[in-house]
Every structure is written in structure tokens, then in C-alpha cells.
Amino acid sequence: MNVPTDLRYCTSHEWVRLEGDIATVGISDHAQHELTDVVFVELPALGREVDSGDPTAVVESVKAASDIYAPIGGEVVEINPDVEADPSLVNTDPYAQGWIFKLKVKDVAAVEGLMDAAAYQAHIG
Amino acid sequence: MTQLHSTPLESAHLELGARLVAFAGWNMPVQYNSIIDEHTAVREAVGIFDISHMGQLFISGEGSMEWLNRMLTNDLGELEIGQGQYSLMLNEQGGVIDDLILYRCGQDDFFLVVNASMTDEDHAWLNQHKPEAVSLKNDSTQWAGMAIQGPEAEATFARAVPGEIMPSRNSMNRTGEGAIVCRTGYTGEDGFEFFCPANQAVGYWKRFLEAGAKPCGLGARDTLRLEMGFPLNGNDLSADRSPIEAGLGFFCKLDKGDFIGREVLAKQKQEGLQTKLTALRLTKPGPPIRAHYPVQDAKGHMIGELASGALSPSLKAGIGMAYLPIEFSKLGTELQIDVRGRLFPAEVVKKPFYKKS
Image (cartoon, rainbow over all chains, first blue to last red):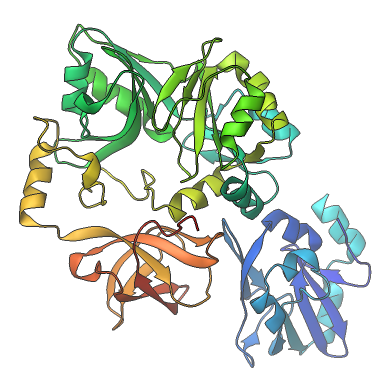
């Protein structure tokens, strides 16, 4: 499984890329592999305030719907229209074109509390 | 948790990297790589499913035919030896205990394929009603089953078991090696179901794979059957819904003589139905719709819930079936499906959802 070293990860398999105070969120290669064919992504409303751990988006495969949790608190400032139009991007390019939403983060330091690539790699075994 | 049963093909599934899940008490492959690819293989080429979890009941002895005709809704009198038919077994209230396929192997000799979840219950119900002269055997654990389905199924059969004769539609054959081949299925495609002793299962499975069949799991089996509007017992059929309500009146021969549940069906036919299993489809692109999602009328009144639902891989649209008050079952009726609090417009459509172009 591909686990890029420049990202942070949650136990619930979201990844975070922090640039300034903007955190881009998606799901890991491991998660997309477990879900298999992603057929629908439900995006959050722009401007929604979320706390860390809030169900914020939904990714659905043929068999199941899975909540995507906010890795850290913030305001939803951007959503990815491309994954709405072509949900399979979550499978084919989970760390780039398959991103799901961006948060304007209140507490940038909270990202440091998430797993780094080595810890996440150990988590998924 | 109770111990799950393993089919004789479990090791073959694991070798192929299948994901196994608990289904009706069995550890079954839900998918190998991709449900969509597996679904597409069956629609366009050929796939193979492990159906060893299904129950195999053998019934024989003088009077079997007459007795079974009183236990089941379809008319066995229409069957030549070697032919099969879809039928339903009802309780006294006209509710569905199980739906099944029955094959007539001889004058008074029958082979029944029943749902995995209901095998024990079906056996007990039949046993409780059977005359002494009739023999009833549940050989489900000794038999393995595979469904080979798709437009290339016949060619796959010819390559895998050369020299054997493929039966005609809805009929069965015994092979030289004692396997039972039935030209039936649950996908809407041409194909056959192949039953053999459990210890021969892996050998045949490999022969069918080598002959070109793609391994397919229960995930694809479910989307394939739903695209055809075929019911799944436990979702679309239940002990408190009659086959008339489920839209299966064609398989209930009310004029064949008495059978268990007949009076209730006759009354429903005469008085008309209150509710009906209704096929619906999302009218715009949307999320997959799933069993138990609430169904509303166009004004936002709750009128039922989905019995089955999926994002159809062939149609790329949400499809489902729900028991709805009869006034909402007319083609074109506007409905709404509640997906996690968001409403998606749908309309009543005709079954099957999917038709071969």
C-alpha cells in the first residue's frame, strides 16, 4: 500500500495535507482498497463548521456506505466536484485527484497529533 | 457467535484473494476484486458463483408429485421428467416460507434447490406435512453447487465438461460422472447451475475457471438479480407477505387444486391488494439506495421502505423495490427516497429494470 511520507493520518484512514492553515482531506490507499469500487461521494456543505471526529462526508461502495470523519476541527472551505462527478478517482488517485474536502483549520498544531506515515503503516500492518 | 459453515470451495476462494463474509450462516465470498467487474463479466461474458450454501432436498416415493403439488404454488402437473420450475412454499396465512426451484428427475422423484437461510426450516416444514410413503432427504452438506452465468456459459460448459449435453432452458441433465446440470440461474443471463458431490467441487471449479469463467461473489449476485427484479427471500419475500403482493402471481396456479395458502391468495386476487412490491428507480444521478431506506410520496409522506436497493452497475442508476400502498404502485408515480435525511426523486418503473439491448 502506498503511504506518502508527507501526509498525516487518522486511525479511521483519512489523510491530511496541511498547507498554511488549509488542510486537504482524503482517504488512504489502504482505505480505498478495502472499500473497493467507490460509486458515490457525498460532500459536506461549504461553510460547515466541524470538530475533530465529526462525520463530514460519506464514501459509498456497491456494498456499503462509510463515513469520512474530520481529522481536525475547522470550516469546510472547498469540496472536490471531480469526485462527485467521477467517484472512482478515490480509488485510482486517492492522494491527489481523489481528495474530498478542505478545512480552514483553527488549531494548526493539532495536525501534529495525528499519525505520521510510519505510525500509520504500523497501524494498517 | 455460532460457527459459520464452510463450503467445499472456501480454500479456492481464499487462494483467489476473495473477501469472505457471513451470509445465512455460511462463510461466503462477497467479492474477489471488484463487484462491478464481476457484474459486468456476467452480463458480457461469463462468471461463476459458489452456490454450495444453497440447500439441496431430494424427494421421492409414491405420491411425491401429488403431495408436493399441495405444498407448493406452481403446478407440477405441467412438468415433464427432466424439467424444472420456480415455485413458492407458503404458510397457512399465504406468507412465503421460501422460494425455490424444483426439478422433476423421475415419475415421483424430485430435486429441490432452496435458500441457504431456509434449508432447515423448509426441511422441517416439509417433514411435518409429508405422508409416510414419501422420502425426504436434506443432502445439502454432501453437495456443492456452482452457477455459471453469462452469454458465454454454454461455450464454457463445452470446454469444461466436453461430451456432456447441456440441457435446454429450465431443464436438467445428469452427467456421466453423476453431477446435476440445470439450465437455470438468478442473473437474467443464459447459464446453468452445476451440482456435484462436495469432494469433487474444487476439481470442477478449476475446470470452469480454466474454461474462462470469472469468479464472482455474492455482491455481484445481488446486483444482477435485482436488475432483473428477482426477489430475495428475507428482503423481498417474507412470512407475512404473499407471493401475489410480491408480484409472483404467475407462479401461483390457483386452479390446479388445493395447496397450502391457496385460500388467502384467492381472496387477495378477488378483493384486490392493499400493498404491492413496487419497482422504482432514481430519476437523477444519486447515491446507491439500499434496503430499509425510507420511501416517501411526492408530498413527503412516509409510505414504506426499500426491501432491496442498489446502484445498478448496468444502468448506473439507483434501483430498488418496496412494498407500497397499491395507489403508489402505478407506473410513473413520483416518489422520493430518503438517503441520510436528503431526498432523491424516484419513479415507479416496470420490471425488469435491465433489458438486454
